[in-house]
Length: 313
Image 1: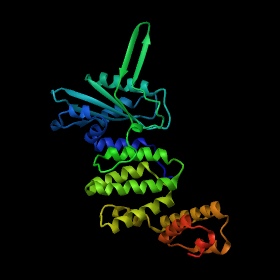
Image 2: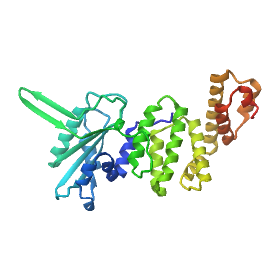
Image 3: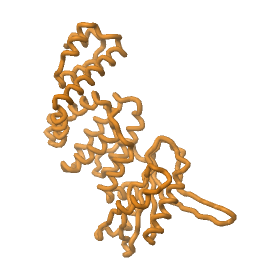
Image 4: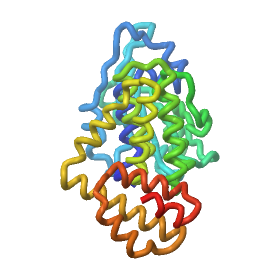
């Protein structure tokens, strides 16, 4: 699987680029109360200062935004995206910690929002309460759970419909790269019918590609299939994938990529039918045609027997 720091990064970027759409999709009642004509201000540097000395090294706060309500008052919105595979008992304490820090620093009202992208349906924290000898401090915050949303986006221009679907599909296909590749192609293909312009398409493709990462051989296969689909349907969006492939085609990178494909072919053949015969191994090692290696891997996955496949090369 391609290396990724974590799933927070595409969400953080999506919120930064599409804050308006974020509120439309997850919190429409808040969106309706904001005076969008006055614009909004993203406070990234202030957010970093507030969380820099936090006890936990990994920051889960993704966005701090100043907006204006329709009644004219200024409002700070704290967006907290929790992307993980299991419940975290420290989650609500972090929500309270960052909420109080921001309120203290700015002296303004703060609204903390949470998005839970884990796969545990029963974990739905929405408040934190400290109590001692009759002294109580409590924070209740709006929370949305991705599991409550459709696992498939269709006919929508809102990027968070697609990002949510990609996140849910990534969870559903964990440990099944071939199934993920199939789902990823269907999901990406669905984007073409949404009437998005080229910058919007490429931005969404980048985010979804981040979440639905594939092993390198399957990734090359996927990009070729997508480029072929684009050419057949006269859709000039993902030609950037082909440019990326050419850019990666410098000699050292090309050979490294070819070897990765050869290794994947040998491993897949061994898993299905045992070791590849010596003559075929020699031909395979001498083959330096990257597109042909990609095709051979795809043909191997579809073949019914070793003999049927080896006759193709």
